[in-house]
Image (cartoon, rainbow over all chains, first blue to last red; front, side):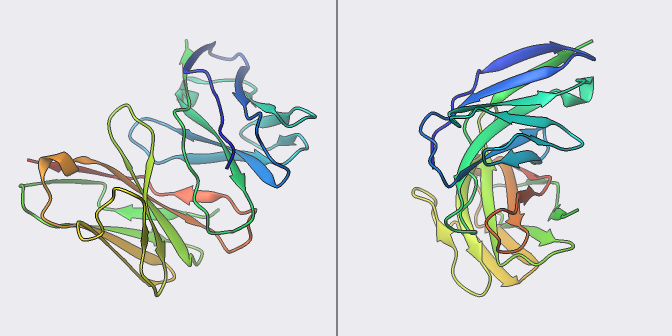
Length: 112
Length: 117
């Protein structure tokens, strides 16, 4: 699976949009981009995933560049409860049983 | 939505004790489950892949005789830390993917914090 690069940490004011970038310049055609987050002392929580089109759900939006070498997770109105480590993961879909491999992620701090 | 339940959430025990952690998929069948370990301020590290009805596949450096994995049914996998020592203290997290379709997200339990005294 392709490697991802994320900033170590970010701050965001409560109520503002949080934009979390991820670089995956070596992504291949059959690899999806997944986003998870981990709130302190809990298991990772699935947020969203996409292949090449932008995606939106009740939690967030995922914007993938046309060349697919980077993406941005957008939390439209960040709250204090969104403070967590956010992981961007690229995963091939050649097999349904390959696990997710976690990098270091971005520690997002939402500030009141 | 798909839920993965992990039990217990916290264990404190003496050195030399064996500890069993259960991972259940509550509303879906999981032929494959994954076990991760997370040390403080570090990311999740994959320990092993658990396959229903067959032997688990362990990552390099993970002792299979130390961390026994049993996946006896499509909804239950167990991890037993045998003769645990203080260095085994960690946050253990299980995960499962709903169905076999490659596009299904992977769901995680809430983890088990193991403290060996």
